[in-house]
Image (cartoon, rainbow, N blue to C red; front, side):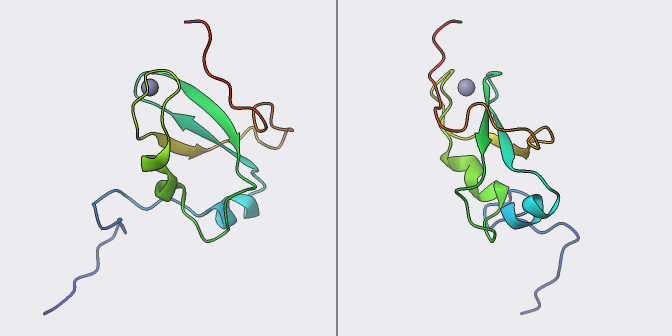
Length: 96
Ligand SMILES: [Zn+2]
């Protein structure tokens, strides 16, 4: 059975593959931004994830502190050259 290659590589569930944390660190970026569909987003230090892991591997694992839904959009933080402000304590959103 032929196995045609696609232009865009995807996960087995069809989600597009994002870059790896290693590739992101090669770009000089140290953190990611995690966005939920409700508008809640946090900045997270990416140092704890291995180089071979993809940002898209993390998407399904985040639970929004805003709405409690699982599944988020993980994107490289292009401002993460600065020391991350929210890396050590991911706070629950107190005010809304
Ligand atoms: Zn949410």
